[in-house]
Length: 382
Image (tube, rainbow, N blue to C red; front, side, top):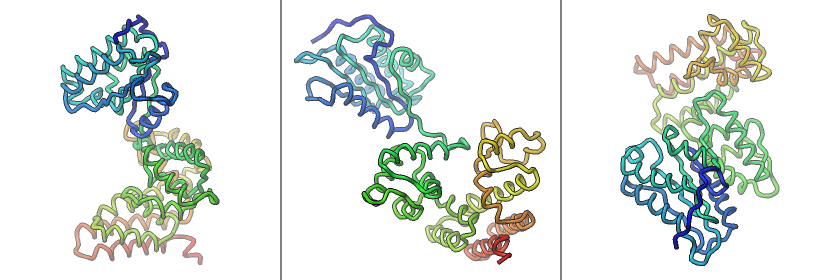
C-alpha cells in the first residue's frame, strides 16, 4: 500500500550509499549493513532487494521505477522496511549511463528521495562505478550516509604500503601474522583487490591450521598463484638477493610458457639493474640515508632539480618515484659502484643481442645472470 512521504531532504539516517571500484569490499560491507538494518531477519515479505544491473537504458529506467515503487509501498504486515538497490551499473560514465532514458529514470529516483522517504523505510544503494561529476552523486553526498571503497591505485609509488596495511588488518581478523619477506611477496601476488586478498588469506588460514599462525615466504609461494606481475617482481628480487639459481629457474619457466625473452629483459631485469645502480649512487655519492622511507623520500625530493632529473619520476609529475629505488637499497649494498656500472653495460649488450642477433635467448639471459652474480662484492670476497 502507498504511504505518505515526509519532506526531509537532509540526512536523516534512512538513506545509505556504498560505492567504489573495490567490488569485493563494497559487496562485503553492504551485506553487513543490510543485515544490520534488517536485524538479520528477512522473511521475503518485509524487505526488498532489487538487482541494479541494467542491460540497456530501458532496463535502467525500469529498475529506477521499480525502486521508487518499492520505496513508496509499505510492507503488507506493517513494520519497518529496507529497500536495497544493489550492484547498480548505470551510474557510471558509460553509454547506458549517459543515455537520456537512463538519466530520466535516475532523476525520477532522485526526486522521490529528495521529497523524503516514508516513516520506517530505509534505502540502501550500492554501486561499483559512479560518475562523480553528475548531479545525482552530489545529491547522494548531501543526503545519504556515504561510504566509498576504491581500489588502491597501483600507479602511486606507495601502493605496496597501502596494500600491506590492508593485508595486515585482514590477517589480524584471522589471527595470522606474516614474516616481513612473506608479506612483501603476498602483496605482489594477491594484488590490490580486497576480495582477492581475502580469498588468498582464507586459503592460507586453512593451510596453516589452528596450530600455526606465522605465514612464511614458502607458505605464500605454495598457496598463492604466481601472476605475471609477481614473476617480474620475483626475478628482480632474486637478482637483488643473489639467488641466481632461482632467477634462472623463473626465467626458464617464463620462456617455457612462451613469454618473450625481450619482455623479461625489459619488464624485470633492466628496471632491477637500473634501480640498483641508482640506489648505489644515491647512498654512496649523495650520502642520503636509507634507514627510513619517509626521510629517504623527503631527501630525494628536496634535491636541486639538476640532481634529481636522472631519477625516475612519478607519472603525474609530482616528484621522484622513490619506492622502487628504496626497495633496491638493500640489494645495492652487495655491489660496488664500478661493479654495477659493469652490470649495466652487460645488460645493454644482452638486450642488443636479443634484438639484433640469432643467438639462443635462453643462453643470453643465463650468461647475464652469471655476470650479475660475479659482480657481487660478497661473491668476489669469498
